[in-house]
Length: 111
Image 1 (cartoon, rainbow, N blue to C red):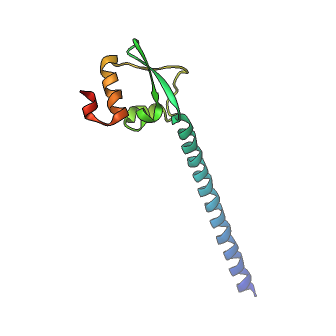
Image 2: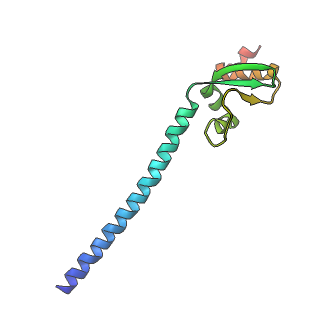
Image 3: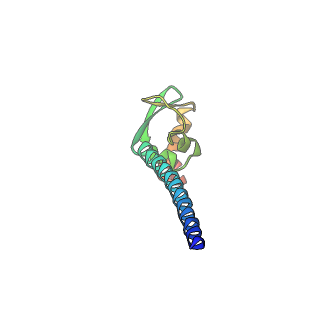
């Protein structure tokens, strides 16, 4: 009888340990899920860019984030950005060419 009680206690302890592990894994999963949802909400929609301090350009966040690690990181929520336009310190003339390519993914569109 004592042997059976000890075995039952061992099994209960094992089940409790597995339960703790599952709760911890679920918490990690939910945190990652929340991060993904936040990222999706941040990257949805349009953004206004102030390019070189001279030109205001509006485009989709998806256009920028899908092709550029810089913009993906910028719109991931990892960096704090000011409300309104996002300043891009580049020459507007060349940035428009880059944006045309990002929108069409067609090098012939650049000619």
